[in-house]
Image 1 (tube, rainbow, N blue to C red):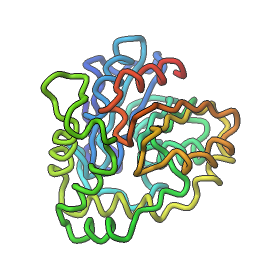
Image 2: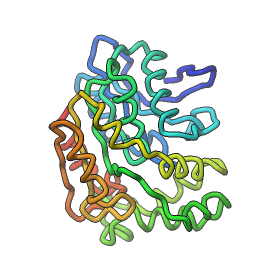
Image 3: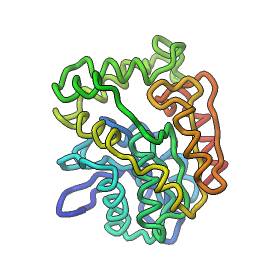
Length: 262
């Protein structure tokens, strides 16, 4: 599905089902230098089980026109604008990493539009190392290598994919390599600069779920602790032996967590 938001084309995967404003809606927002494809299992499941689904390519990512948005607040406001463009009065927001920050911010800034939030691999603050920011600014391939090494738990870097013959690390690397120059740095800088996570959490009034990987190096479980304590009534699911790339490492467990919540 293609939408127009702020005069630019946006791509959203709908799970091969038409958008129906009469059904509960679920909107998926990906992380840095990713696109809608990281949500294929989860988005398709909900699309075929009574939900309207939009798995988005954020601006400047995948099939959506750029430029990439430079702040978490800008992405949050853009998510609200996507709902308007799709004719959806409300939606549950599911975000991973940078997308989790945007979902949290959107729920705080646009409470009437957000019914639930599921934050996967969140952190507050989500600090990014100087070395990684510098590599991303230089469009150095080592930035992709660092992220994918830190995002994938040790046991899944060579094997471990639930789909025989598929390589988690290699697939993630190729997805990032397709990103336009500068986009990764814009994404990482937006995450690093956002200091409003706990303030946003205090303002959220809808139900919330946090899904964390026990072996996440990019966003360690301890970095989500303050969020879990601040969000009212937050539910927390910890996935054992799982890194930041949880939708690739444990797709069924992620889906189970979302099913139980949504």
